[in-house]
Length: 134
Image (cartoon, rainbow, N blue to C red; front, side, top):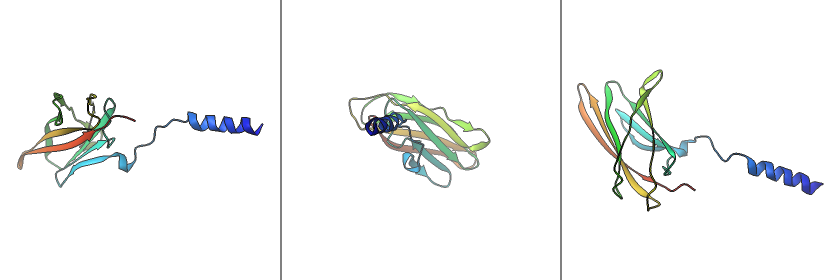
């Protein structure tokens, strides 16, 4: 009987979802200054999974263009369409999926062009690495 109860508890434990809530270490902070903050989650950027970009802009700054390109290997250009978060006009979010490549760890780059009416334009080139999912 004890063996049956133990087997039941083990089955319940194994069948639990392995999804975990987003934790601070799951976010990769790519850039932060007084005008803009850029982050990516999950931090290890697994290929063929949804990646979440978050940008916070100070007053007057706007996203002019955003795209991701492969640095390690030519993978084309992936345009990103950032949308303002409801009720928080300084916060922007975008989603994307990176394609799998022959390399388990590939270098990518976010190219972010920003515009401000009085301060002009700002170009950020932000490298990051993708990974193969476990």
